[in-house]
Length: 527
Image (cartoon, rainbow, N blue to C red; front, side):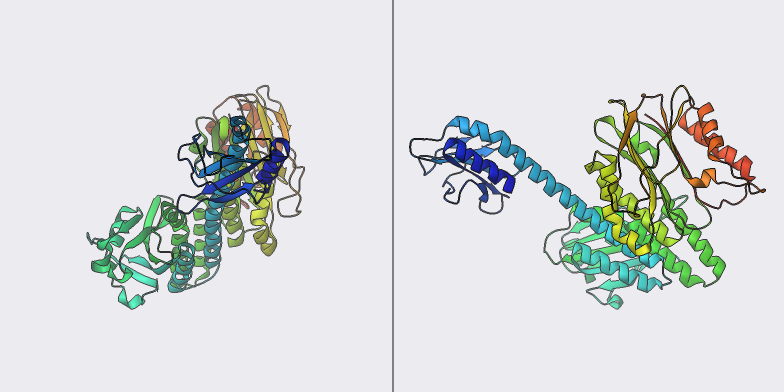
């Protein structure tokens, strides 16, 4: 609060009266946040209601409660001889103090949220490493369990995996209790918390004596967090098991944030377990290739539904993966005041590392898009989050991120090496949104931002990756960017779903169903 302290010092120089701000989290005694000089003492009585003033033990001091989520007080006085504190002093300082304290709370909240999401990113990175190695199911589970337990501070934990042959949940890894002491649990056991979580596919925080009975007794007394381990398939989610956490080091109860964190990564845990199962089942090369294809499909499940930005925007997006694991992706954000954020990216290279970078970029961008209005600064923040991973893997990402604000009639964007980004107007004019910055990860500079006008419900934003323009037929002829744009221009008045369908129909006719050499990604938006 150095800036606030500077304001109070300037106030003292102008009014000849001291000023101070005090604060408390409600659990401890108030302490000084900022003051004009060390000689200002805290009054013996502090008012409870915002805006309320009370007399103090110092006759030359006024104290009042600042409207704030936390308990904050403002005092004025004592003053130099010949001067005295007045209500107008309080009225002068109150808006300034309120603004500073509110800004501090927002920064604290943002830091907390970022820290929580960063834990998720770190955990996702660890699981991604497991996905890239040939490991046994026990090794994968033990590594994952250690990471989760350290994140939430649990002394006792286990991963139970469903055995379809016996319809039981069996411990494959445990911390704080020998694995041999955790008995198999029937998936149909009505008294078991783990079995219930597995059947319902919903996490539970269980408090009290119910945890100490029956098959959950190894987890001790008190409270347990139980979360289903899911594997996402094309037909929906399939439960693979349960992760149980208990006996927190902090002695604090599990929170909704803990539940949210563990639930958010449950699919990745399931992917790692399923990956370990596939690898251990067969070392046959064809089976490993099938596993890579499965991993790619699972990564595609991270892509958001276009419904997340409706009704403000009409968006249709489609990603058709190639045979190998890749890094194409798109991301959508519903922003303030009816604005919509749209992103498309292509990670260099293929394989598990590219898929991991893709997942990290999507997770981190979800945080930064809400914190940065400027698209260039948003991509700069994303680069800071991914810098270590990009340097370690020697990869980079071509990215386009645009913010459509139909209320203001603008499209602002930043483009780091993505060649296929266009706006098609109602009249059919095609404007290329040039890639003036190199791909993310090649340089440390913050990407530039550009802006152009946007006609509401008329203009089309068209984004696609080079897999579409580079699609080749049996004679090795490219489809080409011009044919794609001309088809979209001719169909510009249709729904975005129809436009995307017709582009992929043209691809099918051109390639005659030959296997694609690269991922095919297309996004068309109207807002």
